[in-house]
Image 1: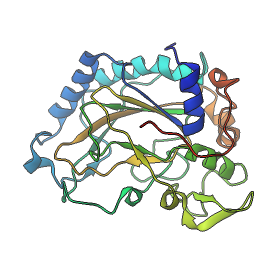
Image 2: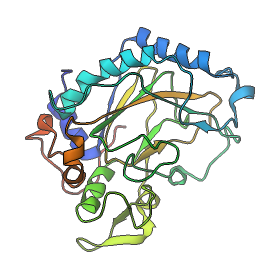
Image 3: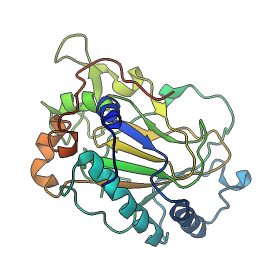
Image 4: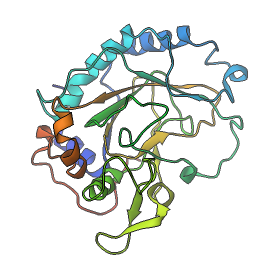
Amino acid sequence: MVSITDAERRSFARNGFLVLDDLLDAGSVAAGREAVVDAIDVDPDDPEQVVGHGYDVDVEGVDQAPFTRIAEALFPAAEGLVGEDVLAPPGSGMQVALNFPDEDAGAATTGPKSVDGHLDGYASFDENPEVTTFQLGAAVYLDDVGPRGGGFTVWPGSHRVAAEYFDDHALETVGGKPNNSQIPALGDEPGEWDYDERLHDQCDPYEIAGDAGTVVLWHGLLTHNAGINNGERVRMAAISRFAREDQDEIRRDAAANLFEYWPAMAGVPMVAGGEPVVPE
């Protein structure tokens, strides 16, 4: 397993994500980027070709061999957080996610709250119907991603809110709607939910910038999304989702108990409340 420090485990327990920048070798990342460039019909470094192109969540025809190697390299880190010998081995390849620059690249936006968040696998997705519940997600940057460059965006601590919600709500419907971006925030009283204002409208997200090879590990209950790309280059990322071998049996209980099925997190203090702490 990859060595995960106690401090990193505490940070993950509190915030629901962990950023690692020394996990993958540069050659593997470069091979992944080259496979994406070979598969798309635009020059990802030419603003005239990519600005306003749209958001492509999955690229067909990409050579998956480099991504199979990357997923295999990520697996020991996943075991380091979740636990040894409990996760299903990674399958072949990864999801390739491209975030093209907005039409108004470089222009001011309405601010970070303009980005909506979601969870994977807790409702019916038209775009990604194959995504199911899982313990840990991993996003890998295949190229440098600067601030406001469409980076992976998270709502720190939102995994704790989701677990409380799923403690007494069905997995398949969130906030009464088949759309898992609709998780409400906790109200003023214990057990009370504010259905008039959604979680991602009340809490600021945190956009993660980083060099090629940056890895973001996130809890399967963490609210997240791709950030706004106000740059002039395509944000290239690849995504893996790691689930336990017995995921179908523990799915319901795992949604309400954040680390019940994470042996590697045993003994790590679980934060019941308070403000999340994110990197500077």
